Amino acid sequence: MSDNTITPAEALTISTLINYTEQGIASRVLAKNGGGNMTLFAFDKGQALSEHSAPFDAIVMVVEGSLLLTINGELVTAKPGTIVRMPANIPHAVDAPEPAKMLLVMLREPNHECNH
Image (tube, rainbow, N blue to C red; front, side, top):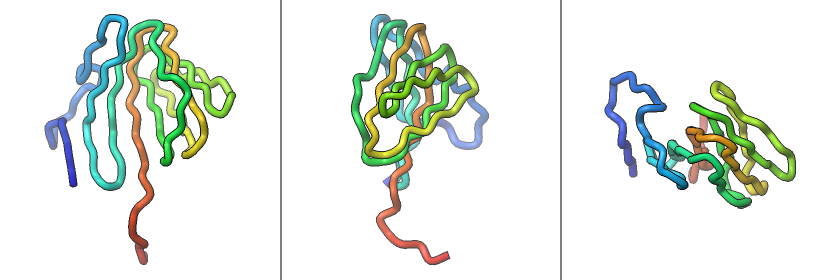
């Protein structure tokens, strides 16, 4: 299964693919398949994702603004151009002290063995 919401073979500016929602969090799935997904988020100032964990590693790439990530109790400040890995099954949370956009890449484990 594959689900892509971005035009193929076209250079797109990531920050223009999603708009902020006043006092909210907007999200847009850019691509999704059996290997994982890419979701773009826009956080208004003061918005947060409460502590949770996921069964897969996740990569956060900040596009605009800054985010405070708490990963297993450790505070990480992420700014545009930075990348942070959130390990599978480890509690993490996201806080936006200012309007911010991030790209989240979820990396799923393959369901089959590959012999390469």
